[in-house]
Image 1 (cartoon, rainbow, N blue to C red):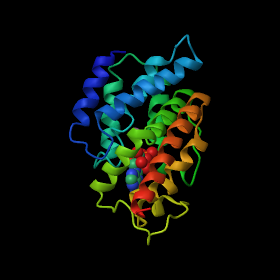
Image 2: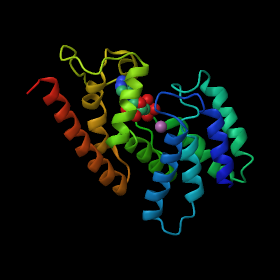
Image 3: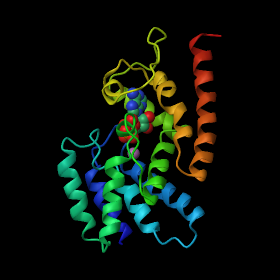
Length: 214
Ligand code: ADP
Ligand code: NI
């Protein structure tokens, strides 16, 4: 496994990404997932696999590519150059194609061990200071309002609703981001998600205070 090659592959694929799923998001997910995995498994047998799955996970995302199937084929072709066993390759493929929040609203997909760390790291990236910055970048890119007290947060129950309901970025905190800490797979993921969620609550409290000119 050549980590430099993984980084170069992702850098080329995500060079035009401007919705919060850029190269550095991939790199942070790779590092965070590996760190949490190593805390639980110091021998680190799967560290390279966790790191690689984390780095490439968004290359195939429908928000990032116009053709997720083709992007998946490109990822798999790249991974085949990287001396992985068939099981490792399958675990990476299953993880990156089943880990997204949106795919798990209506079903819950059980991920392989590596996927549990990668999914937690990706969700943690939606939280904290980085999560706030990414949410506003996403909202701006999609033409959403920052906030509108007339638009009430909805309880998300389906993929279609999630992608198409009327949204504001502050509502996204209530609809999704504040719930993520309950959905963590790993103990270390849950602790970090909790810390970052508290910080986001402080941010939203301050935001509403300023909004209301209190
Ligand atoms: P997934 O790829 O797991 O389905 P999403 O696409 O929902 O996850 O989210 C990826 C990132 O985009 C997250 O950081 C999330 O906060 C942000 N995001 C998604 N939807 C919105 C939204 N409506 N408003 C603001 N940010 C959003
Ligand atoms: Ni991601």
